[in-house]
Amino acid sequence: MGMLDKAKDALGIDDKADQASDKAKQMSDQAKGKTSGMTDKAKDMVDKGGDMADDKTGGKYAGHVDKAQDMSKDAIDKMNKK
Image (cartoon, rainbow, N blue to C red; front, top):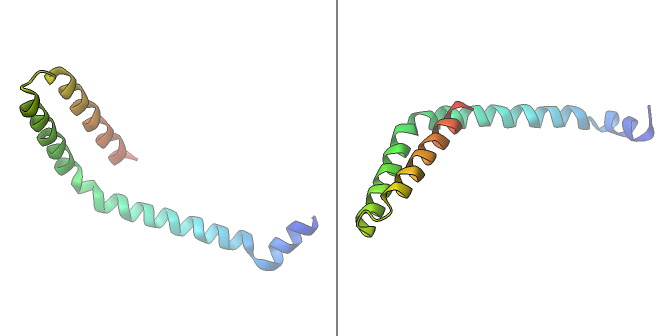
């Protein structure tokens, strides 16, 4: 065991790092739980934004807007599954 390892052991650095990692995972899980119900609302907002873009451009870019909406909804689904 090297000098740096002995210092880590003496200070309990590895234990603190493990505790911090566990706490971060716990907080991440809590955040996912709170946002999982927001999926439908986020998708509705994507639809409203796309509709607004279509209105403002007279539907000139409707194909592009639809593609962007689909990609956005897919990204929302992927985030929710993690």
